[in-house]
Image (cartoon, rainbow, N blue to C red; front, top):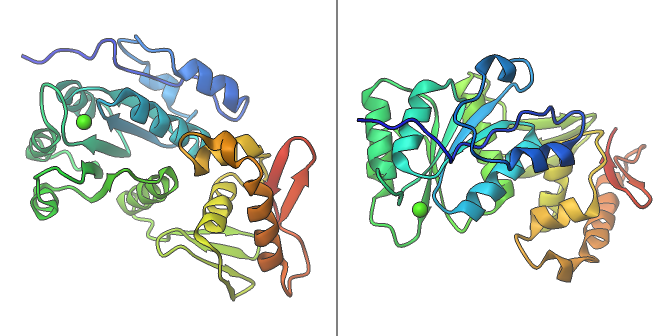
Length: 268
Ligand code: CA
């Protein structure tokens, strides 16, 4: 017999266009037994399910998807709830941990595909887990990431999965004459290749997911460093100035604008 999901469902019900921070705080209230599907329609274009029993990791992933991509995110903390939710809601993608209470991730995937549920699934594996990636792909997984992973990479992978699911193959973010390929992580401006360091790329991609929005230094730091980010508080200026120098070479206009005391905006 299958239980209905109870205390583990988190749901963001506030539009992020209005107030991201407030929305993120509100969305962390748990305990919703159900969520009106009609309210989700129109507010969010994309809705994903995270099935993960590590509460902090699940919350970090959810926040990242809500804030950087504006997705609606549900969380299940064990396999049986996850399967129930995956079968009862029209998700655009499912992030599935393998080691889960009540029903492991492999079994959740097996049952989903047996029920002809074809929502894209990205598996989150730990290095020491025995399940072979080949077996998981054969069971119908679409992609996988090994823990610990970078939240920016997770975001890019999930976006790619959703695009493939919707039949839009292009992984390229375009802002004015800037093109960012989120799969091979290459950047071009006005057709010219721009070579960035890994950290510069992550800063740029993060800004590019929210063009024309003010992104604070703190938000960038939290994105780049999972914890202890206070220690790195003056590195952002270094990355931003490196990005400006490289992006503005031979280009007529600036792309990254500083809003003193507030943050940075990527805008053509
Ligand atoms: Ca786990």
